Image 1 (spheres, rainbow over the protein chains, first blue to last red):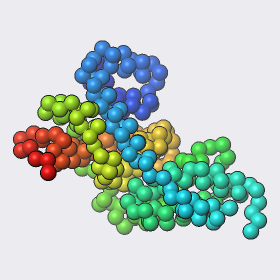
Image 2 (image 1 turned 120 degrees about the horizontal axis):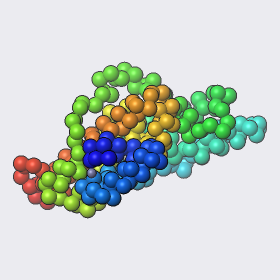
Image 3 (image 1 turned 90 degrees about the vertical axis):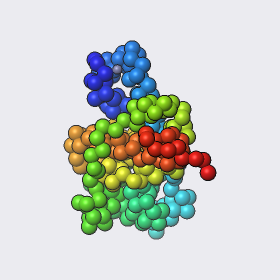
Length: 72
Length: 192
Ligand SMILES: [Zn+2]
């Protein structure tokens, strides 16, 4: 695996969508390639950040109750 | 009103996915009242089409599909023009920040306000936004996202890639505007 393969597969690695073998190949590349590893850390940090920031919104309790009334 | 136990059980299970549906609707409509309307309509429709849900399959994905289909029905008028994302090229925020001498993670990611990240997500065209919501926020697999959206897995992947590029670009622009990083060839914005 070279840096360009690594870049191509980075989304799928981040999202755990590669086969076990490919995950391992990419992991080995990251262990031996600091620039790719740092980029990976950054992309993973961004993905986490998007999740954490968007997850802060929860359905209001009053709305949940209203739905429960309507639906059950 | 005495409902049969199966319907109550179905409704309870459906309601256990309310936060996911509400968050999704809120990001799609960008309006809390519209989000509640959309979610309520989605739940009523789900109850009406309860028989088309196969027990044991992914109810969260099934409900999300109902909600986003309702959203798109309402959105139809602007379907063409508002949904495509200009090709931003291979914009890699990480590389750009490195070139500018910043420490991308410590200097930038840690300093972004949650509201700015949400704003950047909401700025994505809805076709791209919904992929980010499913995969990044709700943790759907590409396969589940593809089924929910009714598109091939390859489309999920390309939309996701585009969306992430655009997201990084928006956040970079914000970081420059707010003085978190100094943009290339621009003057440093003084902190107010
Ligand atoms: Zn590399």
